[in-house]
Figure 1 (cartoon, rainbow, N blue to C red):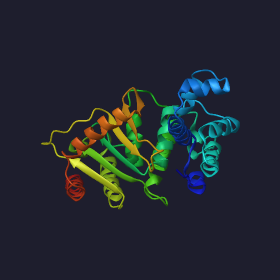
Figure 2 (cartoon, rainbow, N blue to C red):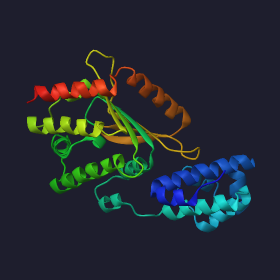
Figure 3 (spheres, helix red, strand yellow):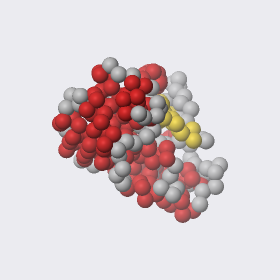
Length: 290
């Protein structure tokens, strides 16, 4: 197993790098035939320390990494690449400048989005943030049941716009959105804002890596909140499910949960029109608003 240091150094972000490190060390431990308690006993650590490292709940020092590398017999080339992850796990990214208004969960979501190779999102409640035009994004904060500071709202609108750069950067993410047709009709602000949002959907869906699929009114489509499956490259990059609802958001990462939500999204996709058919439907709705 070989990790390209250059690729890792360019790709990793704090939360993501820690996840990759934990997954890699867990696999190496299992290959060595060692239990968590055996590893902890070897170094005189607290019994839960190894588990926290493997589950990305705790960082580790370079010395601890070298100790584990020696115990697990990790080749020097792989260990060097893992040291790059360690360096990047404390790195600073653009969203760090908004730490005063972003929850830890939201920061981790942005981090994962920036490193994913493919994202599939399904929702029937609102246009996903990664597809929102600025006017629509601001309107979502204005109608929120929670009072948002005007300055914070402006910053959050900027954040949603910056998140969309993952569609056009050097290694753009492949993104598929599964949306209810009701969202093409749900006017949360002025007609101008709604028209601009639909035009924004058409602009984004014209990109080769972005697909928007609409589930017609007659189809059996319902997704409570927003469900996203984020996938990465390589066996050390387990997929993650992100679920957003009115009162918060959670991640699900166990293989069983990921498999369950993958099936759910596959089933949901079966209720949707194709990308080209969906673009036509959006165009029809946009014409109705003129």
